[in-house]
Length: 507
Image (cartoon, rainbow, N blue to C red):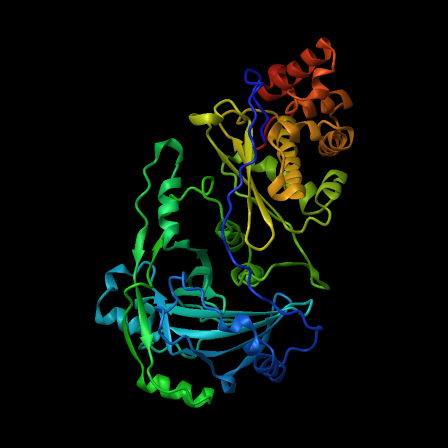
């Protein structure tokens, strides 16, 4: 999982697997057809409402009602609208809960206040029915929660807001869940645009988080912040008439404080390197793209690679490196290979691997087990059959390295990600992976990709740089002492830029 420095040739890092216990949601894959309100309503009552998914409640969710409370959620079909977003057909309609919790991030000062209760009451809920391009249908619930200031401007009435057309001055939050109320995303909205996803944890997750806190430069991270919740209780017999029940619920319901429905908001200094998840993927998308481009991430439905083909999913490759030198080199590798598929290496390695997420970051390895390493990577299986590999570059050691050496490091770690994807939970240890990488086919792919990105690089130099992370393999031991020494020296020269060897880093 690493390329070591010249002085630390025998250290190896095994793949890290972080396993989460998550139940996959049920989805339905009918033949693609025009998804009108009439079609959606027929599917809702004829298929979905009869399914097990309709009956499920994730009781561990911080917004699930207390067990024993009503879990009925009532759609208002007479107010349904339809539209398209990012190639998906959407039906959106108001949703009234007989019992529902709302978490209020960054609003702790409103807890147990009349303003807080009024604010929660002003929140609105939407049932979002999504038909993807391949015909798959997915159910989402979206709660729109205004800030106190925005709610006051609107006299606590935001009932006219639709998720597909936010007012340009809207301030608040989008809470996206499954029908079972399991939280998918909580996104902060500012000036009518979704700006940032917020990490929310609850239950046993908080203890897991506290046990795993490790921060660079000996940072001390604040404790997670308790996010209270309020609950809407609507006690009346269910007549079976959705519209009548909705109106009765609105007239006869009341808000009260939830004793069990809150959660913790993870502070900003949360270390993605230690506790990896998909929030950073969404935030990177929100930072660099329009909300529509990020729709599939926001609602957690998977992103199509081609508008004409909804059956493929784009491999998510995120460059979150801070060091300008390293970031530039990662960006070059991504633009030349992973996204545009110019390189035969990436075409061969990542072809058909639509379930692979590559996440690049950097850190100073000035303490702990990674001192002296160029890089390391860890792989995390996600709950939707994808895997996410985080590749972390040593910005202290690589800051002055040549572009050729940095790129060889990136390609080396990318092949680790590929092997992890191929083997899944049974991925071999690092030394076994390195022996696999030293085989001709994989070795030649790394070497050829390096030469493609640096046309002036000689075959011998590209070969030696490819050996740089494979010095503990059986194949390397079979090389002559002269060849081994040349490889070590070439790697050292390109890393330290001895006599200006290689291409200087472009910031």
